[in-house]
Amino acid sequence: MAVKCNANECVKKFRGTIGYASPEAIELHNHKLDVWSLGCLLHEMATGKLPFAYNNWKELSTLITEEYLQRFIFNSDLSASLLHLLKKIFVYDKDNRPSIEEVMTHPFFTGEPLPLQV
Image (cartoon, rainbow, N blue to C red; front, side):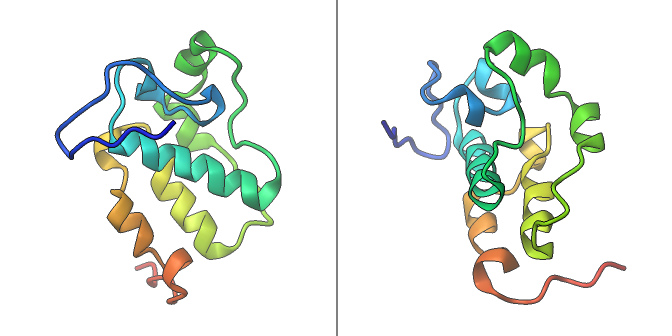
């Protein structure tokens, strides 16, 4: 069930499926958690598998660390634009994750070329 809240509001009780939960889902729910879940959904749609395998809250809190995400290897069959987007989404610190507005204007959704890396 979807729950709508304003930008400053958080839901105190987790709702959803653990396979799509972000690391901070243990503590609160906010819009950046939804961005993480969208990344999981995009990954699953492209590969047929969830990006991270955990079955309970303890596994979630111990498996998904900042160090783990920095070493995580994505499926090499992903398009360059989807890979670029997922690397932006799957960031441990929710404050460094893009907003849903930033996600929706990413080249993966707009079809524009990726920015050149300098």
